[in-house]
Length: 411
Image (tube, rainbow, N blue to C red; front, side):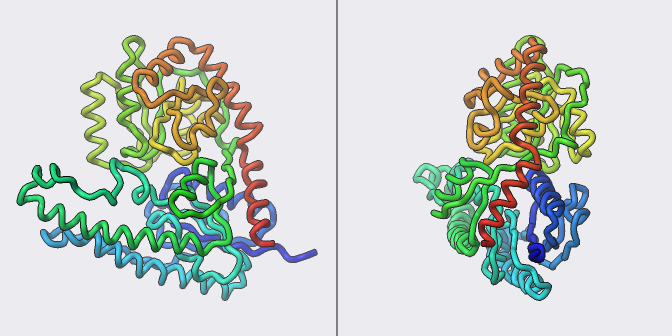
């Protein structure tokens, strides 16, 4: 019998669905008898689920320079910091790769990097290697709210006048740095034997950004943890994710604000937040008469309790690559009203485990209102949703897919 495959894991992930997905992957690989060890830089949020609780981890230093606060540094510090990171990150990953080789690891399983999406470690690990890429760097390839490459127009210059010199200078410096960053990330992505992605939508995103084909390897939900506890459903709506523009909290608040009768509270659970955006959303909710409740850094037990009591989840992010949160809700018997964009169209089937609605607050509000006023419909969809997760979206099925994908690369 051949010796078990030795798999080195690399990640630099914040709290959220991507780290939870990695935790589930590591759990599955460990159960299948693979020898595993993880490498990473220092974690920013150590309260969230820890891969290090499953396998031995090696922390390798990656210095990150803070942005300056002076007049000149406000113009140049972001660019300087980015250039420094593009020098320091390869030093960090080369150290990790050297340690992996010295310790006899056969295979590298890298994961999405919070700094550059595609980490550079693939360049330095001289063996078989795969990257699980949740998404390319969206800032470089999507309008958020517009593409970073777009030049300022004549009207922009007129509006800014003389005071716009600083802004124009910074934008030109940033665009030069972003071009170098895009090249850096592309070369990193090309260094892997295969890239695995979470949806067909993400496969198309990788193809658009990098010109590289990838394999879809769907994720799964821990149904032992996320499960229906049989609790009575209450008339409130849950939102889940970073409290920032990409999760489109604004649209969710506007949708609830269109409901004229039996307007439910919107309880938003998120580990990270943009403070300016949070203040704006609180003001918007007050203006529209929406009871907007924020819950930050809740435990898994608290999250699962909320998913077991909410009438539904409202999920409205812009071009979400996969849509992990709706499946967690479904596993708890909670139906989902989602915007029909991105990978969400692969995890939510209209009329089966939720409602898919165009990007329109009136239509979203109407779908939520229908579930609030018809709890039997919400319950029926929730039970169908739970069965769909049990049939198609379990961790076991996910790890079967991952193991097959990794062995395909190793052969």
